[in-house]
Image (cartoon, rainbow, N blue to C red; front, side):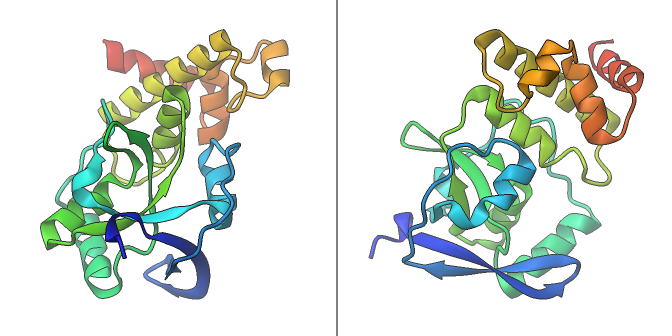
Amino acid sequence: MNKDNISTQITIDETTKGGDTKMKIEQNTTLPKNEKATTVQEMQDSASQDKIEMLPISKLEDFKSHPFKVVENEDLKKLADSIMENGVLIPAVARPKGDGYELIAGHRRKAVCEKLGIETMPVIVRNLTDEQSVIFMVDSNVQRENILPSEKAFAYKMKMDAIKSQGKRGISASVPLEQKSTGITSRDVIAKENGESPAQVQKIVRSFSA
């Protein structure tokens, strides 16, 4: 069997450990792919319809201009302990790129696997546009604790630019049509999603370009 391309299925195990829902990876099952999910919540909701592959770590290229650094701290140590005991419970997300894949979410899991000498990890492979990739990458990281103000500012700026680019190209996957027709801006969208005011978002983004 080719270990570089093993189709798998995720099932949820209600038993939790350390606050994380455990996911069981069942090999040799191919599931119908949902091409419409573009946000983190939509991706999570449709996880049971996605194709999961056990991919070589060496085939996973870090996301270009990824604003969130992998830092050696207590959280990373806890993640390493969990992976040593249980393996990677939550699949990463990547998109095809050249002969390999570009990692969109899962950089910390990848770093831990490399450190532990683990050669493969479960990955959801999706055909996402540049804008969809940026939005998903930001959304899957920005709510983490202990991110730096500079990382948050860079991430917000990246997402704002991605939403604006989608609007120019007529892509409405992340910004509903009614928002466009009522003049709601990318700043408003980010503010609502993160429990901040548009003025706060603008201030954060300005600190990035200052």
